[in-house]
Amino acid sequence: MSVISYDTSAFEQDLKELGISLSKEQILKFLRYYELLVEWNEKINLTAITEYEDVLKKHFIDSLSLCKAYDLSNDCRVMDVGTGAGFPGLVLKIAFPNLKVVLLDSLNKRIHFLNEVISEIGLTEVEAVHGRAEDFAGKPEYRESFSLCVSRAVANLTTLSEYCLPFVKVGGQFISYKSEKISEEITDAAKAISILGGVVKKQVEFTLPSSDIYRNLVVIEKTKATPKKYPRKAGLPSKEPLK
Image (cartoon, rainbow, N blue to C red; front, side, top):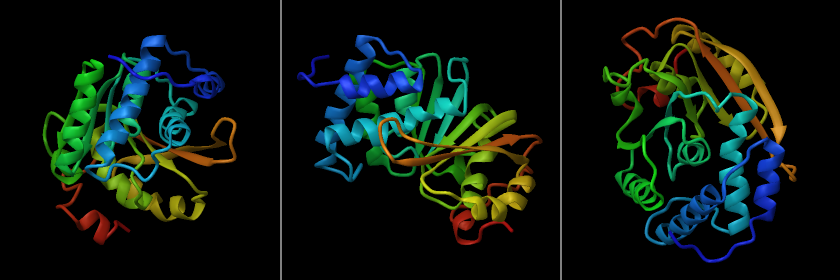
């Protein structure tokens, strides 16, 4: 795996601020991931953010900021719902190879991209699957079988919880990445989260290292099994959020 020479000093400083130490090989994997992202982005719409420093900060470091809310050193199975170009799931896998990760997205072109990255940088125990959360959450091999479900998808917390909580086993967590203060959204989602078997445990608010970029990780703990009728059929969680 060869990449052209990049200045990684700011990236490494940001990692240090998050308490993350990566090997030279892992840094190279991130650089190759970046190159493939830019290359593929010319063919399919993966991200509006393509500048080197911006991708490292707003995609890679942002994804890795999950460590502020969850101990990623534990071996656990992680589901990333609406992974897009692999954020946060693929980023987490590169930095924490101990994780077993499933990347779920409804656009097959993105899955092709993810599989190329996975193959090119030599990752194992990571699976990119094409489909909708409403369908996959009903499959026995996926339902309530993950210690952690994450999502950076842009959706209301009520809708996201219906997509994500069915994947989480009792005692596990769903963590939603948010870029704004959402106290009202959390209050509005509380009943739906309870119906789905969860409870809001905490919010972790911070700015990304060496920036004024606000982030909010909403941590929802799974306290009981999700009723079998959830998630509802495709489209309903977003069109008719639970109340």
